[in-house]
Length: 83
Length: 157
Image (tube, rainbow over all chains, first blue to last red; front, side, top):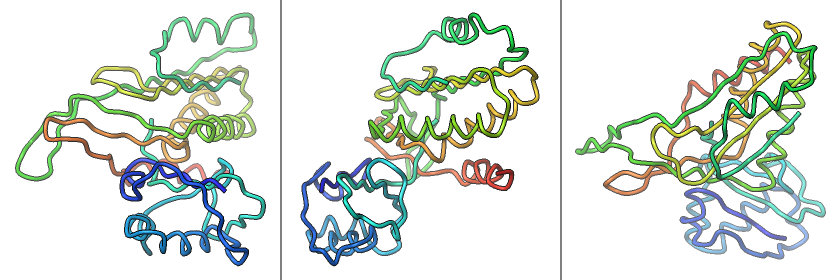
């Protein structure tokens, strides 16, 4: 699946997007967050426990409990500041 | 119902004329235009003027999120016409950022729905503001007021 990062998270992680193949026991967005933290210091910092970020699965707002089953694109981003 | 996300500026008058053209059921049209306000960074030793900002968004999700918000407004109020035009990219103080227009047979629904749309798009559409100051670039934090403004509509669901 493709994982995308936005705003400051892009810089902290170091890439705007990456293709990943997590193991089958990574079932939810929360599982994916924990798995991604191990990829680099930047990932660990951007996706740290208690950090304020949101997520989307296939371009729809998701929570840490959201199931990944068949997801093609998961995104992580800071709280929105549009308008 | 129309949602557009674009880099280019919009012509408010032309947009409104197109929105209401041919629809004689509209008795009230309420319009919100968001502009880039001139601001100053108050943090640290310097008081820097913000020269410009860059609005980043999530192409694909942005359109879906705005369409969802627009559909929700149409579920809650009897509306004849809705339009959301949101810009992205580099913007300077005084530039237009967003246009929200709502037409309804009666003004009450139009006023309420327009306020609802602005409140929800601020907290539910994936846009991020990056301020450009003489000292460098800085991502804008969220405002507690925006969350409160959006939350008051949750109770009315």
